[in-house]
Image 1 (cartoon, rainbow, N blue to C red):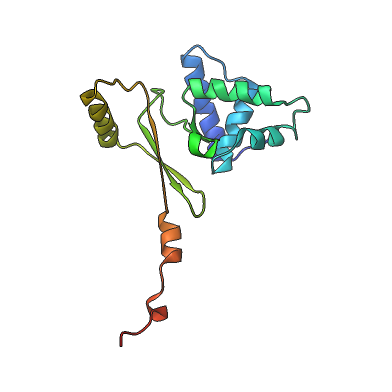
Image 2: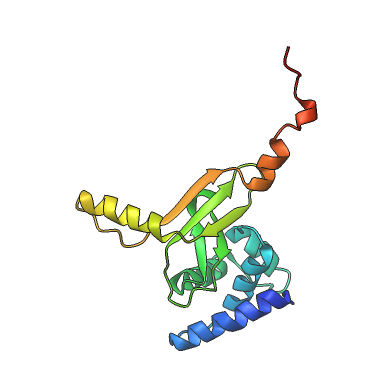
Length: 162
């Protein structure tokens, strides 16, 4: 299974991250990560399974879930609870990081941002009530810029004032 040049570069980087941590990015794990990275949109476990079955006859749900668990543990993907799907995150060598996701209700596009001020505000709010945040993934739903532009009425289409 061939991946895009960008994905191949990220997979090489992911393998190096795993090696540095004493973990192994097996062929199956690499393939699952490659499918997620090449997708360009959040990908569900059963979508991954269906894609894997084209090259791995014995692929079954536990196969995919074990690979996803490993990739999550290594910080190479994020799980978007709201969508029951996964997105790649290979660019952060330090593992877990402050991640927030903006999910467009119109087109389904997901944008990952890393706003440390937002993370700090959450930590502070939790501290004020005696809570310690171990990890947090913020998921906000709304409308992306492209969908907002597409939905905006054109000035020529607006009714003229009386």
